[in-house]
Image (cartoon, rainbow, N blue to C red; front, side, top):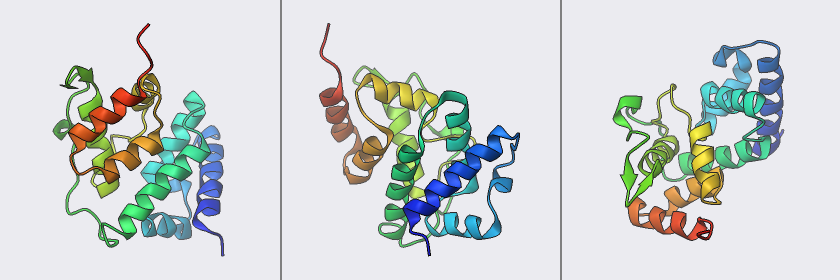
Length: 174
């Protein structure tokens, strides 16, 4: 039996190949057994599709990043969530706007909310944790998708902790 990491790597490779071949239906990317595996670790075919689509279109996030993000979600789903799905889905219009700021840092409230919803399993299908906007924001502050997700997971007061993290990771003033 494959371990989760190897299974996720295989699924990512297959999803990328399917997307390149023209497949645009997230649910068609996985066989029933693979869909059950994804559900068992708290992921959906939509998440796999989003990461494969962005990789094909932008050459990022890579497979290793997908596997790390998926592993953080899996651990949260198995631990903090006790394998219970979210009671509700957070709609896109419930998330902070892209231009919302925390102490002058635009996008931070949005990416923090998206990360929290991703961890909880409540992020709607239309929104991706790790989209190009998230990646650009994190790149600006020398942070990665998995590291930011782990910081959200580990923080009790998202705002203060995440402001410290972003400020510590930011490049020096020029």
